[in-house]
Image 1 (cartoon, rainbow, N blue to C red):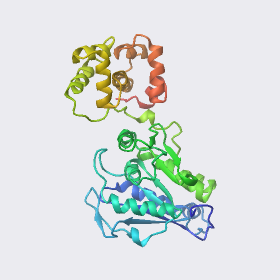
Image 2 (image 1 turned 135 degrees about the vertical axis):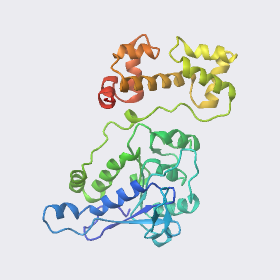
Image 3 (image 1 turned 135 degrees about the horizontal axis):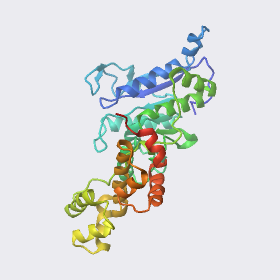
Image 4 (image 1 turned 45 degrees about the vertical axis):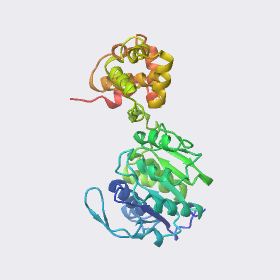
Length: 340
């Protein structure tokens, strides 16, 4: 394993992978902060800087300059072939939708697998797990991603257990595969990596220098619950449209089945086959999302919010909210309520 306790005089080589789809923000945040470890704290305190603990290098498939999704020309340090044995491989976020294909997947995937087999630690940030999941390294492992990508990755790779609630997931041999959740989980990813490799004191210094903090409650409180995968079943689409307007009705699942003209059992089976969710889960998702909007935008008492979305027993809805969102409705309102 390359990325273990390393003498200060030997910086760890960190290759930050980039394609034209790679998000620029995460890429250069990773590089700037890792380059500061061992230097900036000492400089600000009038001390002699150490040698840097990390040597970040931006690499692409061919090493040629590329334009990011803003059209800005970026010149990498070299190609993946120029850096065959990094200590750490970083895969930043991708500026693509969940259903878009990843560019340069074949050569990047082969290089990532080779680096991992030679002992590198491999970490992805946010939607960068889309690329990492295609390498096969996460098969049979747990992983996370931005909550908006978890279901798509899970559908493409059923053997990966996606943890949409988690900010960081460690997997693989020696926990050398690290996936991080939504974009701001770069805080957690970099604090973890620096603490693991350079020591907890360096991680604490990094947190103080850049005002970083851990997302201790995971990413569920920030997630919009997904409402099923894409499909081409017109009967189920009609049921979803009906549910969007009638989810607060009493027993909406039975009503959806009646609207479809199928028996309830046949409807349940067909709905799950098309969406990957049961009709009840689908309705609960709609209700939770509407409740979150009401908590964010109104001062309506929670009992009234529960009734507004179809629950006559506020305690039951409070329990469901806590289970799916990860925090209580009152805590959610306090953190997310919008002020005029």
